[in-house]
Length: 482
Ligand code: NAD
Image 1 (cartoon, rainbow, N blue to C red):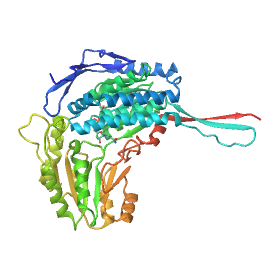
Image 2: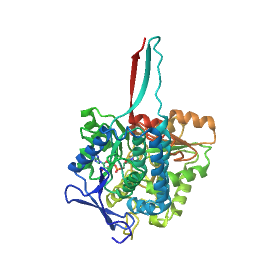
Image 3: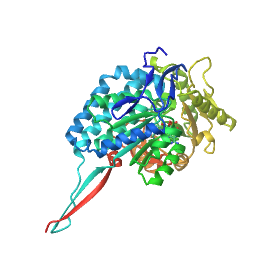
Image 4: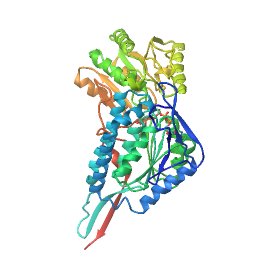
């Protein structure tokens, strides 16, 4: 170990740091080196039960209800300030946990802070309505919390994803249990410290780390969980939905993607290159809304393929702590998976213009930026989520064909349009089946813009004001006064 990271981390239940109920520990490695950097207490079903019981007790005691919306706002601002003031300690932990660049890790801490500011600012503005019913009656509606909100978090942006759910849940008066990802659990523990420092009551936020099949499944199936937010793969989302259906628990599903950018003949190549850099090569492409496909008009195809490949070859591969452009993927298993997709694409007739094989002579899990051309719509690489720095480039003839290719997968998370023609960008944005459409850029938007999927990319929205409605249920009260 000896990396400056604390060697052993406990779970945070009912306002206290506690060991797991068994002696089990989960080893966490640094994706840039493969070295074990820390161990965390493994949460199993008993620990999930304790965390849910603590959240339930906090909710039922009305400890949360007694905090006025104005106080809630102030507490959440304190969480934001705490995260910001600890950014320089926290960002390197994010890097060692997830592998991403230090500048993106700082961005992750900042965005986590922004969620608490944004939803803190909404805590005292969750107004109901009064519906006119005529003489003799008064009606009003109230936004009620669900009670215990469970969050199951993936490893690519664990701090941001936990922060966006915990902040919205707390703003609306819910208690939370967060199951952090076993591959990258460390940064989310800072949320526990921040919430405790900000005066959240014990049990309001519980943070545990366990394996998906055990702790995750126990949390998703727990009878005292009243609402569930899951961010992760489609397959896991389906398992969680089955379990939630048994108890009729509302869910938000933020799942994967195979998002396409459509390049029209009049596109500015600079926009396409900047978007590829940010959209598929940043964080080694391990982004749910990654631009993993480009669908390019035949008149620009060769130019786009050669320009993107040239740009990819200029990127520096190395550890995130040194702010390299291409950082490692999360694990040895993920590296095998990503490389397997590239080899499979070549077997199916595509061409790896650059990359396509793991970077040799390195201890960590490095996959070079990969550009795969001559991809056709039926190929596996055109349909399945790789979750690596791999861009598949397809060709089209007519605009309708471009939209059909872009919409032709099971996913519908993000899509992009590259054109200088405003009318065409609106036409395409309307036709693309995706929760977010980016025009002449990729990934712009922040905590303010609703985010979520269509089709198998999920349902419900996180971020933005709309997301708050996932955490409340409306009660209509009608009085006879005449
Ligand atoms: P994953 O589905 O394997 O795991 C996500 C979380 O679910 C982890 O905490 C895991 O422990 C837990 N889990 C696994 N099996 C479980 C089970 N049976 N019951 C309950 N919980 C279980 O996903 P991942 O590999 O961690 O993350 C990558 C996936 O997440 C990609 O598909 C990516 O697109 C998606 N993702 C989506 C968004 C979004 O906002 N739409 C954001 C980030 C990641």
